Every structure is written in C-alpha cells, then in structure tokens.
Length: 324
Image: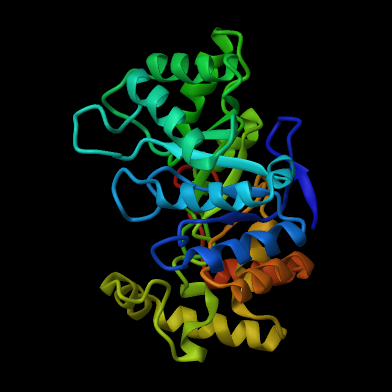
C-alpha cells in the first residue's frame, strides 16, 4: 500500500480507501467483516462510512457492522483512520438531520455509540446545508474537536466556494479548518475539475473521490454482459445505454492495454494532482482485491491523453475552461 498525507494535515492514509455503503443492504455482515479484515491486512487504513448508510432510517446499520468488527478485535481501532458523516435524516422529527448544532452534537454521540469508539478520526459533513449558517455548523464541529470526540473535520459534496468559505471562516477563528473533501469524481464525471479540485489544491484539502467507477459503468459491464452496480436501479441501465458507445470503446482500450477497466479507472484518478485516495465500495472481497491492484498500474502521459480524448473533462479549471 502506498501512503500519503490527507491534504495539508499530518494524518497519513493509504492511496485507496475502503467505502462501506454496501455493508448491510447488499453485503451481509459476515462478508463485510471479511472485507474489512482483508482491507486491513492489505494496508488499507482509511475506512469511510456515514450514519445514514444501511438503508433503514435512524438505525445506522453500517456503522453498527463496523462497530461489531472493531469490538471483536479492539486493537484494530488504532490501526484504522475511521471516518463517518453527518447531515442525512436519522428520524422523522424536524431536527433529525442537516447541520444545526443541535443535530451535529446528537449525531456524533450516536455514531460513537454505534461504532463502539470514543472518537472519530475524520468527521465529515455529508452535504451543504442551505438552511443553517456555516458559523453555527463550524462552532459545533470545532467544539467536538475540543472535546476530543473528533480529531479532523472534512466536507462532502461542497462546491468550490463552499470550501473557500469554510476555510476562511476557520482561519478567522484560529482553527485549521476542513482537511478533506469527498466528491464524486471519475472519468465520466469530471465537473470537480472546474472549481472544487482547484480549491482543494489551493487550501491543502485532500480530495477523496467517491463513485470512482461511476456506479460500475467503468468496471467492464459491456464485456462481462452484466448489469451495472446495484442493478435493480433502472437508472443504471439508462446510464449504460447513454454511454454505451464510449464504454465499449473504453473497454477495448483497456483490453489492448491488458488491464481490467476498473483498475484503469482507479489508476487514472490516482494520477490526478490533488487526489488523496479514491474510495472503493466493494460488495465482495474479490472486488476489493481487484481495486487494490490499481496501485500497480502506471499510465504514461500519452495514455492519459488518450483517456482524456475518450472522456473529455470540462476543459480544465475555471474560468479558463469556458473563458479566456
């Protein structure tokens, strides 16, 4: 496993992280425990989850699965960088979600209980909250850091200007500010290159791309003749139909290279400046092993240009991407 610092922080994480969104709804607990143990044995130390994962509102099923895994061998806790998220609705009462100080405090306590730990290494706000002042949100997060319940704070699904606002407010308060941003980023979805990725690089915020295979579209579905990702979702089939020509060409390009499509997609992300660790979301152990093999894939500058031609980005950072 290759390692790097998470943004400007001193925290060291592996170049690939383990995402756990499938644990519970699609991956039974025993298999989830097998995947986590394998990930740890392979040197993966960034374990990413969220309080809403698990498909049953308010129960935090995925966090419970992780907590049970930690409880079986408590020494594992010190070997992983444990992350979770806050924002989503955890109940049907008015204050059961979003980023009010009221909800953040309660959500943190509940996540700690489910994860069976006394602190969260990276506590991420899962989305922007357009109804709560950032000053209130940051005060609540900073208090959790002061109390020792949270070590680092991160963001997810923030726009570039949200990151700038968050960082500048933290600076005014004399605190470090967010050290990571988790955004969707892959060969098919490159919008973050306009402003999010430049903001991350400017502020020393580590980018943790999620959905690196775009729901399975970049994992070789055409050649395997299988449906995509969580295949019960009609949207997956529609996406494949919309991108079928490009995906077919991509899979041929990967075949000529002699590297599985999923590994190429992950390797491409690892070659992007500012990317800290793409988040893998395996349903079975074999998918984790295949993803980790991407660490050995080196893409030349000419190969990167060929992928850019196949999957054009927005044209670089703003404003040059659309203006002079």
